[in-house]
Length: 431
Image (cartoon, rainbow, N blue to C red):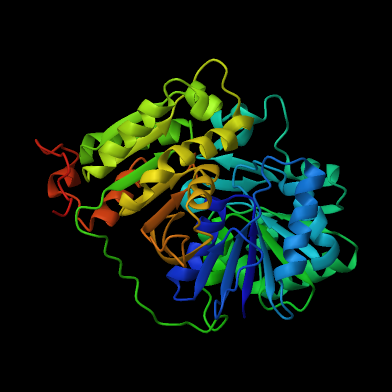
């Protein structure tokens, strides 16, 4: 079996596809439908549709599917586990060409579960989380309602049926499809729930496609005898003295905690660029001085945490613009970078696009949903290691773990019992 994954942002494409790379499959994430994927068994494309209108997002998603999906290949529509973006409209567009949508956004390893057709985050209803309130004030997070609004006929698959006999589960899904249901919403609270769903749906002949986060993807990837595993190396070595650049475009509380731990444990320098500078671009009086500071820092070989600030005029919809502006500020000095960590899909896409990196060969997973890869090619031949992570995602340890990986360093033993070593700065960095 081979697989096409369609995602609406880059970090999402990577955190879904990394499960297949970890399982030993040749896996590529791309920004472009024109990619020549060679012998890749799994291709994940970022359609960059999260900020589009629902109709435009659906149209672009369907075009990507029609362009890339090969005969006999399975389709996985990757959606955000907290339901950001135009996922329902995109699923509706794909359903017309791919069959029954198996909708299972749960990702138990990261605290995302689904019960009675609603998403929960660490035991809290999605609507009550800061992530939802930031972009969906006063909107419902009911899966059924969102899909029906997009024009789909839905049904729910409760835990009682999911956890019953596998043969009966298969019969139920077949019957649902025969009765004209277009989207089946699946409750799931554990990895085993998703594993049962993966086992049954990969064996069905009913036309269907999966709609989920990285949770269902990792259970499909782990199934025996579904894919032909390719053994390959995951080694990476950065150039001597080449600095690690950690880019954070997300303003979530999760990212804030991750930055705090990174600074405390890695001793990494931090710069926070004011949104006003990024909105105005090179015309802003402070642009040149910011560009110079970044260039001098990276030129010295010093690791850097570079963040987008926040002000009273901030609007989540301007995230792409701010990320693109920041990437343009970094671009003249990117050849100095030995390893890149990009938090936020818009941030990652903007940076890679600015330096002509159109696709990544995924190699391994740092922690659940945090993907490490290597550019397939770049405009100027510079190919640093790249780690991507969704903004409101991962443990507090995620950025520090990513820095350790790119530094080829082990976590100091003193951290194992919760204490802090006296001199953490650049502890694991190679000279």
